Length: 305
Image (cartoon, rainbow, N blue to C red; front, side):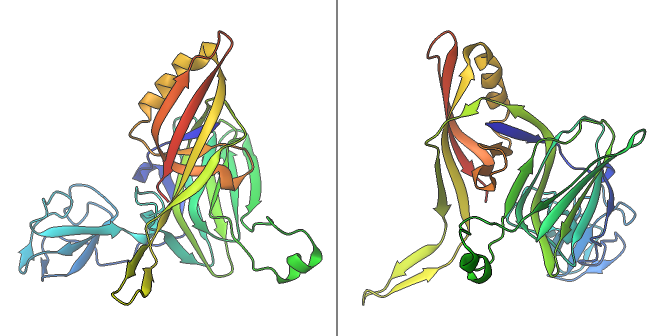
């Protein structure tokens, strides 16, 4: 079992992107806004306290000089992140979208060695790592087309194409300050709910018998005549897994799990198996000190999507 602990992505980390921020007019302190007007804040030139990359809706008429980034909800209501920044915010269900593909370059001062794309819809994605001294040190492309269940030529040609909606990699070369370029490729519209970059940690060895399930938020109502109406909703992945770890490392594992108790992380139960990847929190963990050599840890993980 591996986890990816995400770095917070700030303006300084995003050195290039092909997704333009043109969702709404930029808020300006000298402009008067009517009720329900929409604005965005992507910089501080208009007088905003900070560049939040958020969209806001006016909650009052004759709305002048009220900074959306510091307002308490009296004059402005936050709607969402801008399209370009939806892949960097905490709302995994909201996706950055761009026709023809998404390309973004990120730079971090801390060493990062792992990356995941979550709630993604694209044909493939490519990761390139460029170091200022050594040049290109990593260049890999990963298909997001699933071949699961393709057992013969009939299935190959006639079964519906299924896309993988999450993928994690943990072999990025650990170069501090390197440029990491992620490209989502698609002939239509590429979409990404979360781009997670950080350091991975190995907790232990996942055991057979892991439980993979979903929590469905669709609603089902039955009228007086017994007719059922289903309103489709979102769902979130869940995973119950046991891991075996050296007893000598249990204090470290306990500390890691304690530190991330309020932080969503990427959980990887099996390498190269997207179905065993969940992005979210653990609901509880239980470490059993079985013997002086090996111990067992049970994890109940609840995904955000």
